[in-house]
Length: 136
Image 1 (spheres, rainbow, N blue to C red):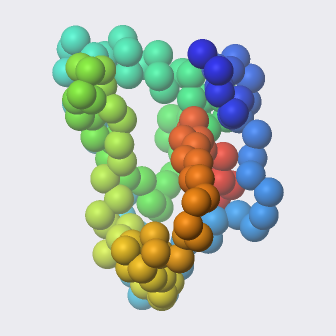
Image 2: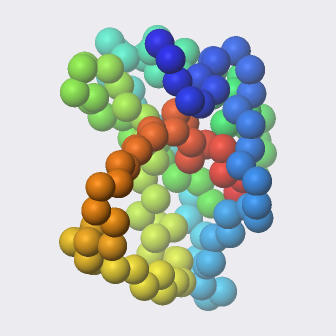
C-alpha cells in the first residue's frame, strides 16, 4: 500500500527534527513506579510480545535490564481495537498529576475552519507511528 511515510517495520524510525520533548514536572512531586507487570489476556500474549519486539527493533522502545533502578515507571494497559487486535497503551495518570500545566491558546475548531480560504483543498496525512519519532 502506498504511503507518504516510511512504514518499513525492518528499519529504525527516523527522529523528527527539533528539540526533544520535555516533561515539566512539579519539583515537589513524588515519583511513581509500578513494579508488577501488566496482565495480558492469553489469546493476545504472542501478538503483544511480537509488537513489543518490533518496537524495540524500530528504536521506539528500549529494553531495560532486570534489577535496573527506576523512579518513574507506568503500567502498560492492553485494550481491544475495533478489529479485535490488542492495542497497547500506557496509564500516564500519575505523570499527569505531577505535571505543571502549560498554556497553548488556540482557536475553537469552528473558527479555525472558517479561516481556510474558499476553493482550497485540505490534505490530512496520518503519520504512521509519528508520535514515536519525537525524541524525549
